[in-house]
Image (cartoon, rainbow, N blue to C red; front, side, top):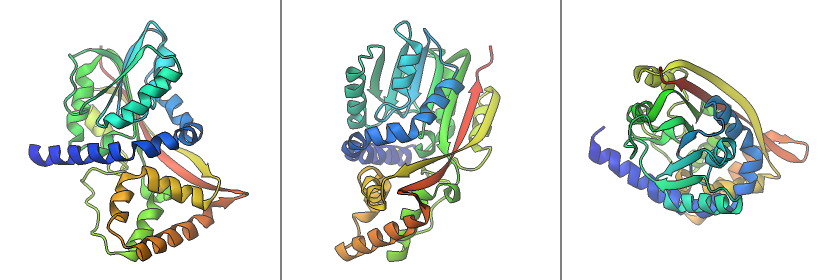
Length: 285
């Protein structure tokens, strides 16, 4: 991938995530309640403890950086990096409300980290790496900034068939308008869904004790309408597609989506299975 094309992708993503930052802030409590287990798993896999200096890549609205800051305490620090300034503005407001003075957020590109080698005791990343145009560059940068003995812990989405809450909206749109087949090598939600892909990159960078687990869980919504509303307010790729549709087409997509989610009705809630690929590795001493 040439540098100009890579930069175009990054700038497009920056605009997209800035645009949906308000939606993410609106739904922040919901996702904190539904997905907190992932933050705790990443903090554990990265072996965070008091006094550490930690880098969190793709922090967005502060996950898992804020939990990391609580974990390392006042003698440690967390630096959160993200492309989108508006997402980080949400994270800063949350850090202030939580009275966390040991976490800072700054904009930056994970493939060209603005830090010296051996700067951090640990690196965490939640749902970031699969969106990068040049993932091997990012894993090489992670290995560079990690101190010897330090751990990296990353979460990326597993396959679409195991994550219906993500895939069914695309299926609904495809029934209304023709879409080109996705490029499996392009940045996207499921770019690192294949077992061994991220593991291989980390091993190529000299990291050791690499582990990979498909972590299965669930999340739920109060209703099909709640699911649809949140999707339209936070999912930048879906927003981009919906913007090209006519009003009748949008209504049809909504009907198809709300109809499809009824198969996940459990009691008085819509409950989806989810599958996340958890990868951890250590830099040799």
